[in-house]
Amino acid sequence: AQTVTQSQPEMSVQEAETVTLSCTYDTSENNYYLFWYKQPPSRQMILVIRQEAYKQQNATENRFSVNFQKAAKSFSLKISDSQLGDTAMYFCAFMKRNAGNMLTFGGGTRLMVKP
Amino acid sequence: EADIYQTPRYLVIGTGKKITLECSQTMGHDKMYWYQQDPGMELHLIHYSYGVNSTEKGDLSSESTVSRIRTEHFPLTLESARPSHTSQYLCASSIRRGGTDTQYFGPGTRLTVL
Image 1: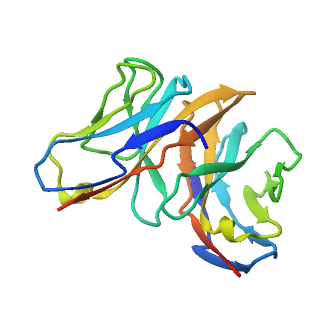
Image 2: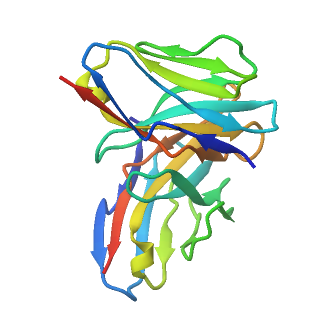
Image 3: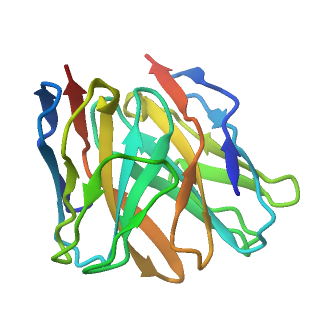
């Protein structure tokens, strides 16, 4: 079974600064996907970024980028130029490839962006 | 945001009542999922479906049941609600694109059983 660990229950960052959220996972699989989801207060969960494990290049989406270290089983999310709208719960998730599309979620990190 | 809808958004109900949480998606996705999420906690998969007439139980045991008679509709039913069922229920659907299945979530139903 896979496990996903987010070691930072809460974080805060000043507006316009950069913050990194950590995520580690444990698996014996070689082919899998990793995701970061954002859940704003009382709003819908949305996909932030995803990474295929077979790709060495780190995924980026505008101000969001990941640092994927496959050997270390680490998948951190960097948010650059933080905005007030980035305030949310962030969940790291793991999906084994060709295994029914099941997502295993971490416990989440609550990020507060301060003005 | 994806076209996936859940109703009601909030429900407060007494013990012993039968309830159905609705989930619909207009994207034609084959796969649909139900997750249970306690406040500030991670999501746990309770049911999933690969398509019409397909339903499976997830990792977390749940007293709820689901049905998938139409592709776009995946309702969850509790025959007799109890306070232990108080939680947020998130519906999701997914489709494979570029070799990756990405799940899209609905807004959730926050259920309180008194």
